[in-house]
Image 1 (cartoon, protein in one colour):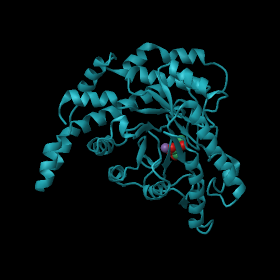
Image 2 (image 1 turned 30 degrees about the vertical axis):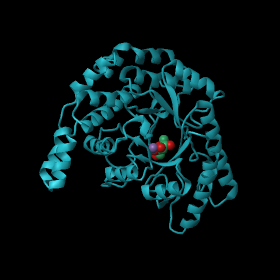
Image 3 (image 1 turned 120 degrees about the vertical axis):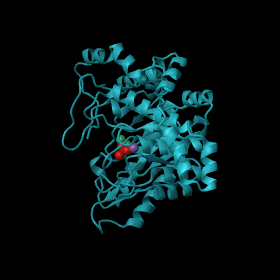
Image 4 (image 1 turned 90 degrees about the vertical axis):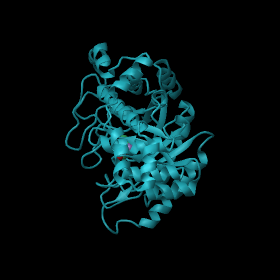
Length: 388
Ligand code: LRH
Ligand code: MN
C-alpha cells in the first residue's frame, strides 16, 4: 500500500486510547517520585488526556481504572470528557490491591473472597453502562509464589467460573478483554501467564471475549508479532496495551526501547486490515512515566505509534509477497526494511497540517503553557496515583 492518500487516511482513522493512570504519580517499589501539577481526580486526568488529543488528533479516548478513577457520577465524568473532546474508553477492573487478594482474587481458594472479587468485576460492567464503554479489561495478578502453594488446575476452574459469570452480565456491544502477563506480582505461577491460556478461556466464553496483548508482558525474546498474527487469524485479538521495556514489565514509552519490534507488530496488524476502528482492535497505551513529564510523554508515545503505523503502511505488499513466494529471502526482508528505514516524520507533519494541527505536537503543547498552568492551579489536594 504505497498510495500516500490511502496511507494518510488510514493514519487519520487510527485511534489510540490513553490510560488515565499515566497522568498520575507512579513508580517502583523503591520510590514513587511525585511531580508538580499531577491530577487530583479523574476529571483532571481527562483534562490532561484531552491535551494529548488536542495536539495529536488521534487520541480521542481515556481508559479508566477502578477504583483509582472512582467517582460518584460516571455520567458526569463522561460529560466532562465529552466537553473536552474525548470519551471514556475501556474500564479496567482492579482486584490486585485489596488485602483480601493476597492469595488471589477470582482464583483464591476462599469462596468468600472469590465472591467479593466477582462483585467488583460486575460493578465495573455497571460503570460501563454509565460511561457507554465497550470494553471491560481484565488483568489478574492472581498466581502463586511457591510450588505446591495451590492447585494449578483448580485455580483455572475458579477463573473460568468467574469469567463465565462476567460474560453473562455483558450487555449488547460490550466485550471483555482478558490480559495475560508472564509474572509479577506472582513469581512462581500466574493464572493467566500467556496468550495461550488467555485464548483458551476466551474461546470457551464466546465472541465477546477477546485477548489483550500487553507488549511488556512476555518473556525476553518472545516474538510478539507472531502472537499478534495468530490472534488476528483466530479473530481473538481484542487489543493492545502498548509500552516498551528493556527487561521486564518496565512500562516505558511505546517504541522507546524497541521501535523495530513495534513496527513488526503494526505490520502484522496493517497486513490483516485491523488498523481500522471497525476491525475492533483497541490500541491502548499502558505506561507509567515515573521520572518524565507525563502529558509530554503521552504525546511522544502517540507519535511513536503513528511512526510505526506509517512505516507499516508503506510496506510494498506486492513486492514483499512476490519475494516471499519466490523464496527470495533477502528481497522479502528488504521490502520490510525499506519501509522501516523510511523517515516518515515529514509525512506525519503533512498529515497533521491536513488535520489542522501543528506539525510537531510536542512543540505545540510546550508552547501552550498548559504544563505551567496546571502546576500553578493544582495546589493542595492529593495527587492521583496507584494508591498501593
Ligand atoms: C498489569 C497492567 C494492567 C493494568 C496495570 C496498570 O501489569 O499491565 O494492564 O491494570 O498494568
Ligand atoms: Mn497492561
